[in-house]
Every structure is written in C-alpha cells, then in structure tokens.
Amino acid sequence: MKQIEKKIKAASTHNNASDNKEKCESIGNLMAASTDPVIKPIGIALQGTASTGNDAILNQDAMKAAYHAATKTVNEQNGVMCKAMNDAGKKVMEKFPNNDAQWTLYGFEVTSGEAHDQTVPDKVLNGSITQGDFAGQVDVHFDPSPRADNYTLLYTTGDPTIAANYKLVTNPKMIFTSSKISFILPPDALNKDLWVIVTAHNTAGDSPASEPFGGRKIQ
Image: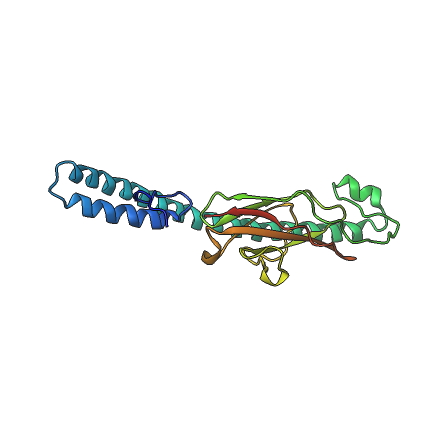
C-alpha cells in the first residue's frame, strides 16, 4: 500500500452547521487551554467563531419557527378567503340565477357551459431542486403540467432507480397546487444525495411519474 503524508481533515460546509459548531467549540476549548503562545490565541479565536456560529444557528431556528407559524396562518387564511368567496358566489347565483353576465360584473370567474372530457395531465418535465432558505428545506421547481390540478412528491436518498426506496412528502402537506414547492426533510435525509419524483393529478387520473431529478445534498 502506498504511503502518503497525513494531514488534518478539512472541515466541510457539506456537514451540518450544528455539528461544525460543536467541533469548532471543542477544538477551540482544547487549544485555548494550551500554554503555548501560538496555540492559545488561535483557540480563543475559534471559541469566538463557534459562539458566533451558535448565535446564527439559534437565529435560524427562531426564523424557521416563525416561518412555519406564518405559513400555517397564511394557509388557514387562504382557506377562509376561499370559503368567503364561494359563499358570496352562491348568494350571487341565488340573486341572479343563470345570469353569468351579471356574475362577471362582480368579478367572479364563470365555468364553461360545455362539458369537456377530462384527460390525465402530462408528465412533469424539467425538474430541479435547490437548498431552501431554512435548514432542512428543499425547494422543488418544475414546469407546470398541462391540465394538472395538483401534484404529489416522492423523495429518496437511496438508489433513485428503485421505486420501493421512495417516500411520500407529507410535510408541510401531501398535495400541492404549485409547480414551485418547498418541503422539510427529516434529519435522516439531510446531507445525502436527494432525488425527487413528481406526479401530476386531476379528476381524470394521474400523469406518468416524472423522471427522478435532483441528485444533490440538502443541509
């Protein structure tokens, strides 16, 4: 076996920030305890760096909690607004039956007067994933699928060619209506190559599943 020169392993930003903070703090404490005039100030500086990193992590945690609380409030209020508009629409139709011209004057959208046979959505294309704004958050992007009412997502950190490896995304919800989706990964899926599959749905059925996309690590 070929012998090579040993070196201290480089710290990596691919590792979790909390793990790096613990390591930075531990090394700083040990070096700061040294009586060596070169080593001691380096250790003290590392302690300060770890402290600043810890403050950033705590701030992120607070922002993450606030984000989830705000998102919950927005989703709840979105439901309230939809119900209020739907209730108002029913009243308008009762007041002006079969008068779609009057309905549109009040700003309501009107459904087609002809029945069309629905067909399943097209396969989702051009998917990609990026690191979200918060720890553990992945942002998913893809082209909207024609005729899709909503989408479901599956993810895996295993072999992306094996269907049994995939799990359904349920956090923050299971069904999404947008082609730009953010969701939170469980801790055991972080810092691993992540793959996502998206399926579009409507009342006629399901689209073919997208090809697996992603293949990058989310922290």
